[in-house]
Image (cartoon, rainbow over all chains, first blue to last red; front, side, top):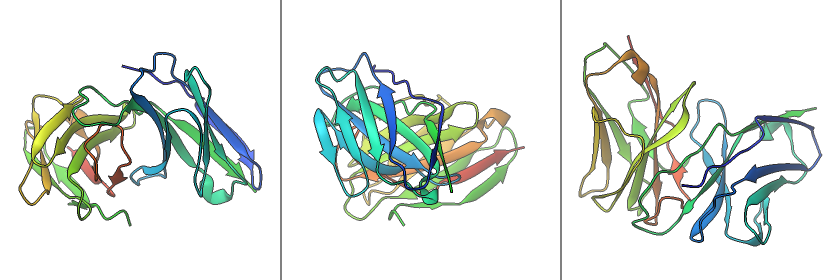
Length: 113
Length: 114
C-alpha cells in the first residue's frame, strides 16, 4: 500500500502559481495519482488524476516524473478561494482492487491578498 | 452541488445507540464509498460498494456495517456508538468500479455521540 507524504502547510499570495509536491516512493505499477481539494465542513472535490508525465485540465496541472515516486500539483494564479486542504492519493483505479485508500493529512494552502 | 445526497446532515445520539446514515449517489453512478473524517484521524476510507456488491474495505470497525440497495442508494449503520465515533461521515459516488477513481462527495453527516 503506497503511502504519501505532503507538506503540512503552504502559504501563497493571490496571483501566484502554487506547486504542491507529494512523495509516494512505494507506488505500484497499477497505481494512479489523484488530487482532491477540501474546504472546511465540505466533502472533498476531485481536482485531477494522472498516471505519468503531465496532465492538465481547466483548474490545475499534474506533473509526474518518469520514476513516478513523486508528483506535483500546480495551481496557476491562485485566488483567495483556493485556500483549502489538498490531498494526494495513490491507488489502483480499476475494479476489484482490494485494499485501502489513504488520504493522509493533506496540505493546508493559505492564500493571502 | 455534487449530486450526492446525504441524510441527515446532523445527528446527535447517546453512547451505546445505533444510527443509520443514508446516501443517494449521483444519477447513474454505480459505486458508493463511505469515509469517516475526524480531527485526529483525518479522512479515512471505510468501505466501497459497486452495483450492490462490496468491493473494498478500509478501516471499518466491526460495529459498523453498510449495504447498497437495488436502487443504488446506500446506508451506513453504526452501532454500540462510542464517544470516539463522533465525526463527519462522507459518502461519495463514482461511475466506475475502482478504489481510486474520480469520486463525487456529498456534504456529509455530522455525527455527535454524547
